[in-house]
Length: 404
Image (cartoon, rainbow, N blue to C red; front, side, top):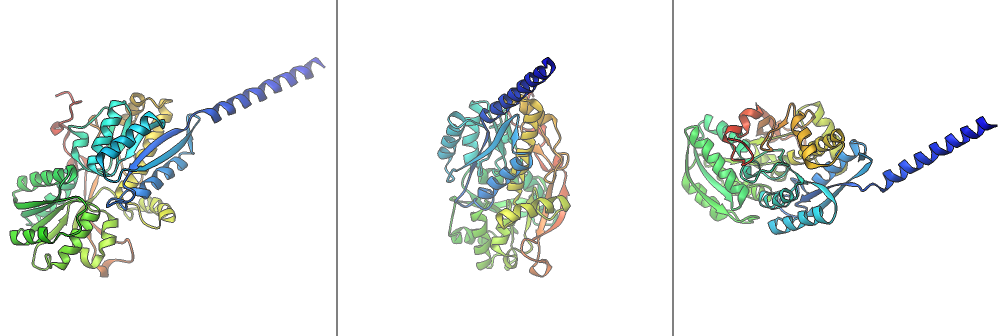
């Protein structure tokens, strides 16, 4: 009888312990990641709801929780306003319990949100913005610039163009941090390769009429008109350049940052022959196609490099949190920088001391309509550029964290 009572007592204790553990897990606060995105403006197709979807896919594929905490993705629209991005980041980190900031499409907004995260010793992983300042002057101990930057875009596209004899350039530049950095970095590449910049003009963000800028580009007689802009600005510039007959007159149009969604919007008839650099393409191999198929089932479009990078970076972060047994930024970032990234997005990618995630870049040519098998079949791979060649060498970094 006493043996039965002891068994009952042990069973009751076990049940109470299990119930207590379950209750503790249920009351543990969720691990929140804050995506600050362009949900409604000229970068909405590049990041926007697609980036939110990619982050949620990463959380689901990880199992939905880590360290007994449910993973939550919260998203907000920064409306392409730097002050609003900073305000959102401040509210997420101070009031909503967000552990890390992700994406932050556009450079001016990323620079603003990054300063807020830096002041609070929180991790910020940038996927949509391109300004090289994010891993240079604005670098932080917990900042990661994941997908691309202006140096890599310029180095991959500009160098290839000059090698083909396209050695005189005119720039149409979006007048904010990203556009200015992209023009500067491409100019350096062109001049170093033996080319020459014959002129340029800056345009406001979200420009609808490029006619006056394109006339200046035409009159410059430059062999290449470099588009140092992105999103809707790139789409409008390409379409209007075609209407002006700019490419038919012999000038080559080079979008220095373009995404597959931009090419889809422009159409192959207009975009064919464009040279562009990308960090990712949905149709590269079986792994990229498998992820893209799942992504398309939710969004009805293929992922951009920024959106694919969101999935990869969120997964890398969650793995580091699990390994660290903590969400402490220093502990997590130490593991993130020590662990190579091998997934559908990057092979042997690594996060350097300055926060730059180094990985291969790709040079593509846009297909002719006759070469495409259907919608989204837009690119021909011309070259794979190793990460160490594509991105700014660490020795040239202006990141104040580095010991010179």
